Image (tube, rainbow over all chains, first blue to last red; front, side):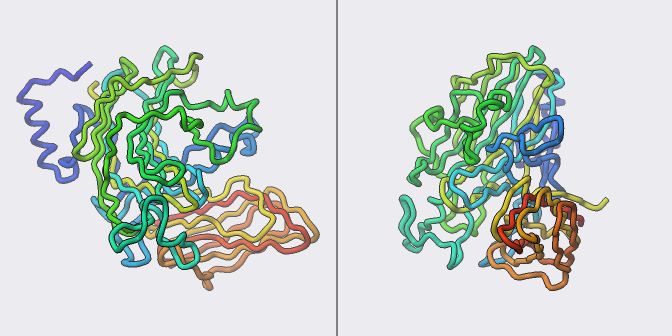
Length: 321
Length: 112
C-alpha cells in the first residue's frame, strides 16, 4: 500500500531530498526507515551468528555460522597511501573474511515490518581483496589475470558479495530475497554475474542433527553451488580499479515486495535488472517468534586464501507504507 | 556521547600452537581493552601469554611496548588495555608448557 500523498507534497519531498547533500545521492521510497552513514557509527549492523543452546554454550552454534567476523569502522587504510577514507566521511563499514578459501563474513541489520509493501535497500559500496606483502603474495599471476601494469591479480582473488534479507510475515511464512555478485567462480575465473539461490537457507533446526556434515566454510546462504543461478548471461563489470588499494564507490538499489514475497528489481550503477521472475523459495514450515521479521544482511565470501572485504559507505532502507 | 564498540575476535576457538587474531581496524577509537576468557587450558604446566600488537596498515605488525603482557595459567578472564595505538590492533598469543591446549573467547572493547 502506498502512502497517499498529493502531487505537490511529493514534489516538495523530492525537492527536499535533492537539496540535502546527504540524501540526494539516494532515491528513497516515501518513508525512510533507516539512514546509515557509517561515518557516525555502525547503526545496528552487527555480526551474524547462529543460535546457541539454553546454557549459553557457544559450542552449540552451527560450525558454519559461528565465525562471521565483527564488522569494522574502517578509514580504508592501505599500506601504500595510508588513509583513503570513505565517500560520505572518513569511515565505512568494513566486512572482512579470514584469509581462508571459502570463508564468509556477514553483517546483519534487524528490523520488523509495520506493514507489508515495497521495501528498498540502497547502498554505496566497494569491494577489495587484501593487499599482498612479500610474505603473503600469491605472485603476479592468479586466475584469469597476469599482472601487466594495469590488471592486477588482486581482482581475481575476490570471490563474491551478497545483499540479502531474512523475512517472515504475520502468517508465519519465512523466506529470503537474495542477490549475489559472483566475481569469480571457485576456480578463480571471472564470472561477474548476479546470482540468486533456488533453495532457502538451511536453518539451525534443520542442522541440529546434521552437524557432522557441516564444514566451517559452508556457504550458509545456499551450500550447494548448483543451487545458484545467474540472473542472466550478461556479466557486469564493476570498477575494481586494478589494485587492492583504490576505492571507488558503487551505487546499489534493490527492491522487493513483502506483499507478494517477491523481488522487484536490482540496480547497480547504470544497470537495472528485472528480478520479478526470480523465484523466492519459502520454508515449508510456519515460523513462530519471527513475526514481521525484516532483516537485511550483506556478506562477502572469498574463493581464495586472501582476505576479501566489502565496504559500505552508507545505506538507506525505505518503504512505501 | 562517546562511541563504543565491542568485537568478538575469537569465539570458543581451540589452539594448540601460537596464534594471532585477525587484524581489527579502529582508527576512530582512542582506547581499547582486550578481554580474553580462557574457557579451558590443558597440558603440562600450560600458559597463555598475551601480547598486544599494533600496525599502521593491517599487514605489518609490532608489539605494543606500552601495554603490559598478560599470562593466563588457568581458566578465567584476563584483560589488558591499549592506548594511542594507531589504527590497527591484534593480539599475539604464545602457548607455553607441555602439549598446551587453550580454548578462548577474545573480545576487543573500543571507545572513542
